[in-house]
Picture 1 (cartoon, rainbow, N blue to C red):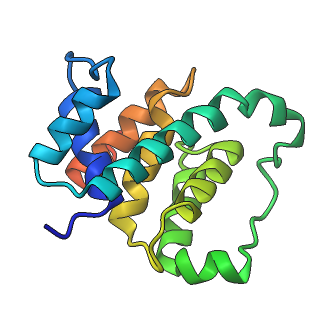
Picture 2 (picture 1 turned 180 degrees about the horizontal axis):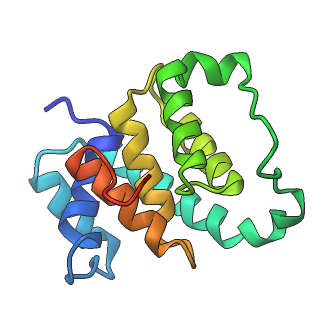
Length: 161
């Protein structure tokens, strides 16, 4: 199989996070299931590391609240970010911000998590999943998460005007 880290993350989300069933407490059991599903061990480990780093970043997000960009600030992408996050993705992130789905700090976390994915380029679908995973455990972001989930699964959030 040619699945990558995003595919592993989608599998974990759709089989555990999107259901009442919880993620196995023992990471070894989850790893065995992912390997049985056909994912490469290296990609499974990358996905676990990616999720661990996301959890750490979210836990520490409150510490950076004082540095949060204002809602009127403009985000400029570095050359390295532009190589991975093309104009269509930048447009998506801006649209999500303008719609109130992404706050500036959440946007920065999404960009950081996108840059942590070891692939030269991402596509809009990949980034939509990253946004969904970032919003999943952020307190007070339940509506934003719900809107993003609609976008991922149905192509357009139902409540955006």
